[in-house]
Amino acid sequence: MKKISVRARDMQASPIRKLIPFAVAARKKGINVFPLNIGQPDIPTPQPIRDAIRNFDQEVLAYSPSQGEDFLVEAFSGYYQQNHIDLAPEDIIVTTGGSEAIFFAFLSICDPGDEVIVFEPFYTNYNGMAFETGIKLKALTTYAEDGFQLPPAATIEKAITDRTRAILICNPNNPTGTVYSRKTLEELAFVAKKHNLYVIADEVYREFTYDGLQHTSILQIEGMAQNAILIDSISKRYSACGARIGLIASKNREVMGACMKFAQARLSSPTVEQWGARAGILMDPSYFQPILEEYQRRRDAVMAGLAKAPGVVCKTPTGAFYVIVKLPIKNAERFAQWLLTDFVHDGNSVLVAPAAGFYVNPGLGLDEIRISYVLEVEKLEKAMTTLAEAINQYRIIESAETGKEKSEGANA
Image 1 (cartoon, helix red, strand yellow):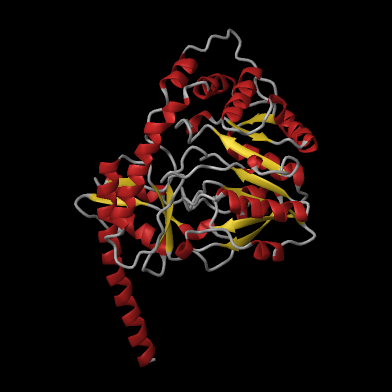
Image 2: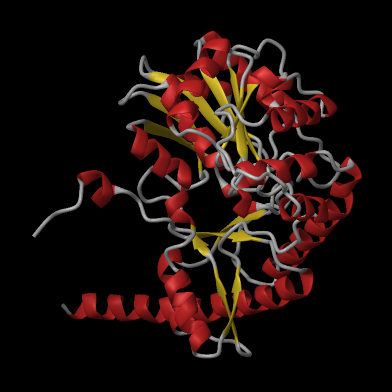
């Protein structure tokens, strides 16, 4: 019998998607399953993007340049200038989603066996990308009790070795919803420059900050032009996840020259979607205000619902549209599957992402889940009521199992 590769065998399954078959089975039973597992917004993709794609008029659907179409890199440059981020068209390479941009960053600055410092919990797909490129993610743990803020600079420095090449952050953060302050980024930049490291900054949720907070880009930190690599995407910004248009950007010529080689090797990003992306970027920035207000209402609905579940620990997130929730249970993965196989409340259940897959260090996140608040408020309120009831019921189940184990142990 032929075998698959070791790489394929050892590749982590996505904690975001692996429970979907159970959700499909639950729906076939007539259960309404609220999808809280994945960051797929339900807000319509803006009309200008859809119109641009619908009316795309090119007789031959040709390859685009490996850097991306001129019209798009110029539009991106204008967008960054509006946001007080100094990026010229030559500093930008269009990628097939933000995921490819991270691959390019890893491949351009790291050799197999090199290390990138991350802060767990982190976007789980970083795990897969690092595994595929032969990079080791060295994870420093952040905690729900303090809102998943970054550890002190001294702690970060202790993790640096002669194989460390970069520090990777997501700001605003997926999966925690944390927004890092300018002061935090300045401290991170100090460490990076002191040890001649890159900072790879995944900033795809730039527009999504709440409670009056403003996002600070790594490229807005003085002295970081040669050390900063920016990752971006239109997926969440314009509710266009399926368009697969992202970018990698840096003022560092050597880095961008390396990235161009990898861009040429994969030929080009989707041509039609680049035209659609341009239409979104050229929209008036006022488009974002009602979107932001809607997401803040959704966040507030989630937090109000979680407040009704005794024993839950989570600080109110201030960005993106996720929250990591520490549950008063032992095994969140088992709980998440139980939600879909054995639980229903008023005809409803919920699909969540167990958080252990957002960590590197073993044993962490076992009692946590990630919630994506990408549904309208009314649905989120019902979902939170359902989740609170599920937590209460599951605690009883776990308590009974613990009592039984103790009894059997005493009789052994």
